[in-house]
Amino acid sequence: MLLLIKHSILRIGLASAGITIAACSVAPPNTAAVAPTAAPTAEASPVQAVSSSSTAQGFKQATVAEGLERPWGMAWLPDGSMLISEKAGRLRLLKNGVLEPTPIAGVPSVMSSGQGGLMDVSLHPKFAENRFVYLTYASGTADANRTRIARARFDGKALQDLRVIFEVSQVKSGTQHFGSRIQWLPDGTMLVAIGDGGNPPVQLEGQLIRKQAQNLRSRLGKIVRLNDDGSIPRDNPLATNANADPAVWSYGHRNIQGLAFDPGTKRVWVTEHGARGGDELNLAEAGKNYGWPLVTHSQEYTGGEISQERSRPGMVDPKVVWTPATAPSGLAFYTGDRFPTWKGNLFAGGLVSQDVRRIELDAAGNVRSQEEISIGQRVRDVRQSPDGLLYVLTDESNGKLIRLEPTS
Ligand SMILES: [Ca+2]
Image (cartoon, rainbow, N blue to C red; front, side):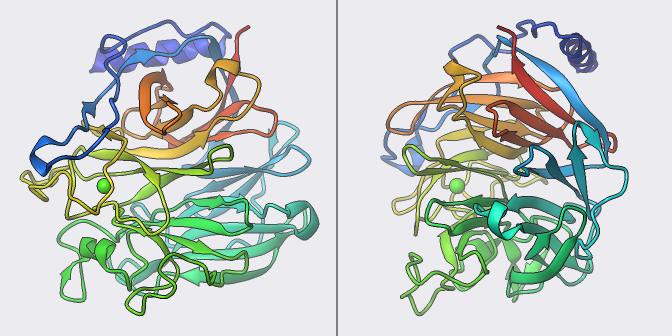
């Protein structure tokens, strides 16, 4: 293991110097995820556990910025500068390649503890006109907290008129599983992923809090769909269900930290954490149930089954299961021109795997293959820049912004 880590650092060093990453496969090529075609029985789930595959080539890694403390999310402003969130509750501006030393003022007070803190940052699709910035964050105390979404106007220096536009209705304890990512849809609504609230023994309303993922009245363990002011669209899939929170768009999720949109097929892709193993890539669709915690490939951290079932009729199987866990965070769907052969691929960051998985899809939305791009640090976010390159944030106390660039 130590050798592997050292090797990764060596490779990063080479990469920073502009040398193409050498191949270093942990497993033979073409053993990557095979997508399930059908789910005949719970005993014969077709999903294969995947740990690794071949190693991607034809690019180099350049460090764009460092000195970021546990960065979480990133967004590009129209002038090419970037907003980068830091978990402790700071929003940073990277302008002309320089990280401004003073954080942006006006960020809400966050609970920075455990997995909670300032999380995603996203711009309104019409930011150039309205200057709206959206933040997701954990709010409250270790004993009473929830995920919130706030909107503010960015005047170039500070956030103004900050307003909480949405929050989880239930207050929970503990510092786990807040989500969260924001993804805009072409109709001007946004999807926001919210975690299930935590692992055992954390309880809510007399049962393990993880069960809230199957409770349609709860916003925990869900993707919600919202209008740009936080109100709930009338055409949400469960809007006419009297027993459901109308904000719910999909459910049965454990803790989604990667959310991406394919503008060609209109598919929504998510990565979510399992407990011990069983991390998932899912093709998310309105109104569907993704199974947690009734159906899962993951095990309890303390050992033993969370569920005997891997698949169930009426619940959607994952497209990939990662065991051992990669701890996926950050997901990009690549549409750029700078890496022509990567067009239409997903790029999934991994906190534990310390890499980015390049995932090839077929026309039906099944996974054809995976390659690993070793980063050598915990990867918190992966995004495509407006000019078609891929950017990676590392979850370290001296976190980096890394750019992947083609070598040819
Ligand atoms: Ca699932």
